[in-house]
Length: 389
Image (cartoon, rainbow, N blue to C red; front, top):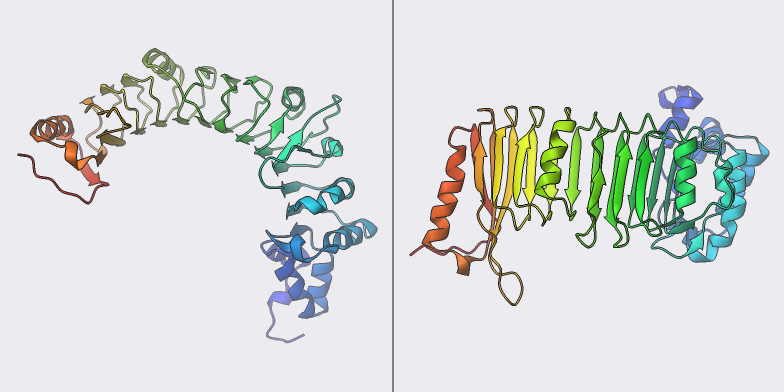
């Protein structure tokens, strides 16, 4: 060994950690450096096969997993993009991974394929992170053994209500629940059985999905978006620790928002995007520091009188034709007694042909409410300029 090679002298767990940041192709190249690196590669615990590796190497996964199984090597991470023609091998892989005490499993089969994920995965007692894309997940029995599961990420997947109920009952250590473009569920109800849950992301909820009811005392971040603007029932008043709330294309109304905020004493960030049922946003919460409103086209007024610690406010003003009949979003009225440290960011997204003296007058009046703020930033998407006559 070259005396100048100090890296190779590091402890094996450190070298293993270094190689964990490489995909399997690049990690394998290090095996030619020396006997030390060859040994590290042979016993590598993180196996990342990259995006296209399986298209070029048919049996490599089988050989590597067989080596780990024969030498009783624990596998920390297994990540693969699975082509359809290799799907039959997945059952055997899962059995080996469970035997090797898999901790983090990432498998992507692309868009939803209706292929059922091997039910053997539910026996993975050591699993900490499960991330799947494109599968159908069903539970025929109640045998879920995810005793140490901390993160569950499911995308483009068909989900079974029975499976989620079993997870809620068993996974008391669950911290992150992320569902994206999912099918099969009509509601998400968490009834206080996940004391460590801190993040919930429900992205692009399907049209049949109608209800969110979460009782999670330590939940910090909640993000919900839907496809059809018709997700109406959201119950989160029991989430007393919530700090960040982001809603996109969700049909919440003025009464819901006004009654919600007093029940969330730790809320700091509110993001409202395409919430078309809102006419009046009233922020009555001393903990709120950031408010962003985007494309809430029926909004008439934003009242921030009871937000003394608000530091940043962002609003998109859209004005112009929308569709064949034409539509003009009104300029909202801003009311505030916020902190003098407030920074306001107003983004104009106008139709230059629709701007006139009256519109500019209303804009000046609206942003005039921020004259005691620390800063006001105006930006515009359009590169066209039309003078007001």
